[in-house]
Image (cartoon, rainbow, N blue to C red; front, side, top):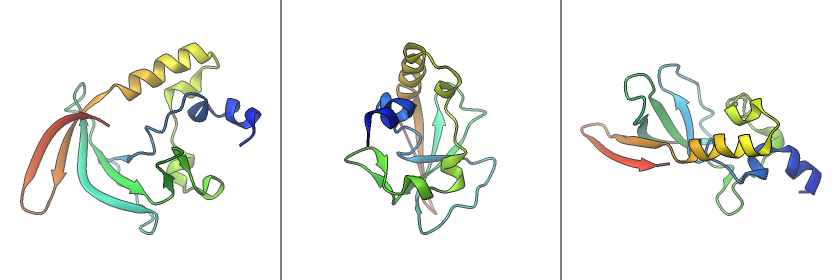
Length: 126
């Protein structure tokens, strides 16, 4: 990827892939996932700071490249990926972007396994 494209892409510039690994979808607003791209991780993430209001269903995207942190098919990514917005997109100041992204990366979640007959919880960074 050329340097100009890298700089104009906030995620690449700040080495962030928090939205993509895993893909997190608001459980209160069901989204029809493209089954051939998204593998259901059968878990729910609940932010420790917002346990009563936010529930996120998690998926692994088969196009996510864990070595590079990038999408293997960025130009053809699905709508859920195209429409995801990060608060860091609302500023052009790299320092402010970095602060926003670091806060996102440091957020703690309760991880709830959604197996058919039992539930488990653990607290972790995702």
